[in-house]
Amino acid sequence: MSLLRGRNREKNLTGELYGKYSFGNMYNELLSEEHIANIVNIIKNDFEIAGIIDKYSSLKIMDVGTGRQALAMALLGVKTVEHYDISKEHVNRFKKLLKKKKYSSLNILTRNLDLCKQELPKNKYDFVYLSGIVHHFSNTAKGLINCANAVKKYGLIWIYFYRSGTFKWFVNEMIRGLLSVEDIDRFFISSAINYANGNLSNPHTSQIMDDFFVPYINLYSPQQYITFMSKLGFELYSSSHSDPLSSVNHNKAHHSAVLVFKKNTNSVNAKDLGSLLQPNDEINQLDKKIYSDKETKDIIDIYNKLKEVVLNKKYDVIRYSTCLALHKIAAPQYYGEPALPPKRKELKILLENTYIYLNKVINK
Image (tube, rainbow, N blue to C red; front, top):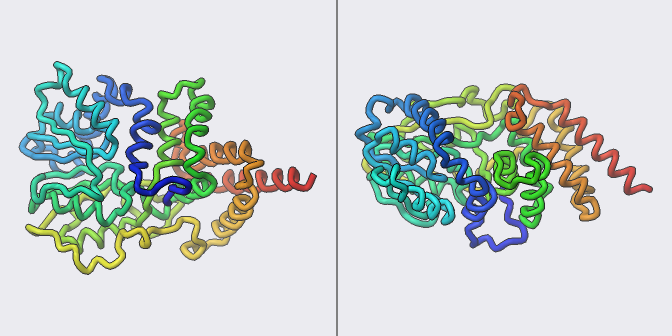
C-alpha cells in the first residue's frame, strides 16, 4: 500500500512522517520515564520470546525506531546497543536525550540511516531487533537483506511485521485508497480535534497518521517471510501471533506477527530470491481473487462503488468522516475495544449507508 501520489518519491517521506506527524508529535511523552518503564517490561517479554532472557547482558544488539526500545535495552543492561532510524528528527532528539546525566553513561550509539540505501556493517550483531519496521521499508527485500547481513553467525533477527490477510489491513487498505499525501495536515489537525480536544501531541493522532499516511505498508504473509529468510540461510527459531499460518484469516489472525530467525551461515546468499518480498510480491488486500467467501467480495464491490464517488473533492467532508469511521472498525483496539472478532457487519453497513447518502446528494 504505497501512498506517494503528488510528491517526489525520492524524498524521505517515511522519516518526515514519523519525525513530525506520528510518534514525533509526542516524542517527549514516548521517552518519558513512565513510558520507558513500560517499554522495559515489553522488551523483557520480547527477549523471553526470542529466547535471550538469560543472556542479553552479553549481546551486541541493533535496534531500529524512535530510540525508546534502544534506551530500554540499555537500561536492562545489554552489552551494547546501536540504534538506527530513518527520521533525522528522531535521531537528533534521541542524541539530545542521551546527553542527560541519567543516561550519559549508557552504551548506546545512534545514527540516521535509510536501511534500504545505506549498508550496515556485516556480521556485527548478536541480535537485530526490527519491531514494526520491515513493512515500512521502501523495498522490504532490500532492507531485510541488509539487516540479515548485519547478524553474526548463530545470531538472531527479530521481525515484527504487519500481517497480510487480516481484517485490520483489509479495512485500512480501503482508507488509504481514499487518501493522498495532500490530506496529511488536515487529518493531523482534525484527528487531534476529534480525539484530544485539539492537542496535537496525543497517541490517537500518532496511530491515525501512521496507518493513514506512512508512505509504505508492504503486506506479506508469515509464510512469505519464512521462505525468504530460509533462502538467506536462516531457520525459524521462535514466533508469536503467527498462527494460523493460512494466508487469509479475518476472523482469527492477529493483524501483526513476530518471527524470530537464527542465522546458520557466515554470509547471506541473496541469489535465487525471485520476487519474494519485493513490491510486486506484496498482497493487495482488496483483490477479490484472494477471498473465497461472497460476503467479503460484496464488501469490496460496495467499497469500490463508494470510492468512485467520494474521491470527488466536493465531498471531502464526507471522505474525511468516512476514513475516521473506518479506522474505528479497522483498529478498535485504539478505541478501547477488542481487535477481534472483526466488525464485518458494521463495515458493510457503514459503506452501504455512505454510498446511499452520497447518491441522494448527487441526485438532488
